Amino acid sequence: MAFLLAEALFLCGFVISYLGEMSCCFFSCWFFS
Image (cartoon, rainbow, N blue to C red; front, top):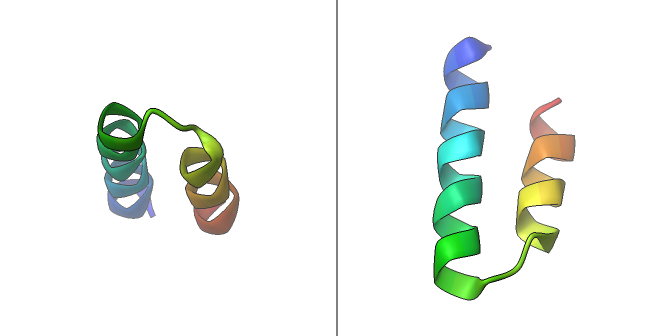
């Protein structure tokens, strides 16, 4: 579970830096929670 959370946070940061949006981050955090 910790690995999935870390991966989700990593993807979150990548998506934000690439797209400049947090919607995908919120979706990922909600999906993995």
